[in-house]
Length: 322
Image 1 (cartoon, rainbow, N blue to C red):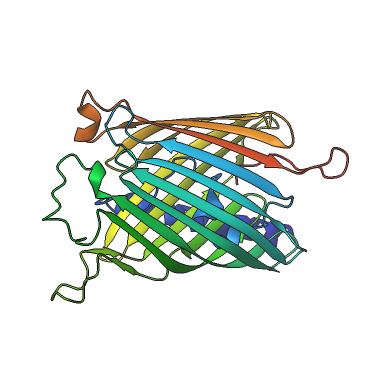
Image 2 (image 1 turned 90 degrees about the vertical axis):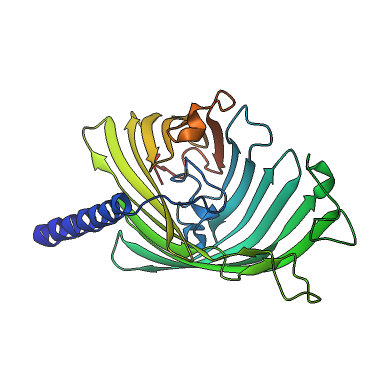
């Protein structure tokens, strides 16, 4: 039995190391979708199979201000609500709002989330997730400084509004110390500014993205835990973005760590488990690309809040990284 436990531990570490090495190998060539430095806490936004896997019902909020000081820099807000229906079924609601260019471009996505978990052993689980919903894209060309009505693809109005349906899927393997997941949050590819009267049917094409996540928790002592984690984002066409992070959890209360987005940004992370129910997370990114050297960019800031409906004396949930 001890041999089997040791073997499973080695397999989990080997899988995580393989994912980590793969992430270091791929090169960042473009940014896809909204990005999060605190992806280890905001997992359901990228993988529907995560819904309900923590145990209690939880509500999480995240706000990200990107490239502070840059006029029209992106802002992102997420709302995730999820919890278990029973030991196998989890449900949730995910809302993501993106804004670029001082309200010029607004994109709001909402999804209903469902997960089904199969226990592969007493402490190991494999979850499958589906989500369905859609997103609203709203572009106001009047707010563009160099807007030229004759050159814009929208001829009937200076406003472009479109609702697009969406479905997504994911798989998530998790134990008390290890997790790995693969997901495609948007399976339907959307065309924007389509115009059947011209030979060009679409000017903007939203392509399918996939996410690979993994992390492992090492117990360094009774009061100190260490968890490296990785997130790899890929887009149809061979483009990749890789985030690698390392966090320390002290006395199950304070989290200190750092992250690196390949060829893009260095980040500092801080977390505080204020009570069993309430957690606060902060992150600050500093660009290492040419954009970071401009005097108009003061980095990116992120704040994360999570509340879980845990009754004292009813559930003894040990704070964790994921």
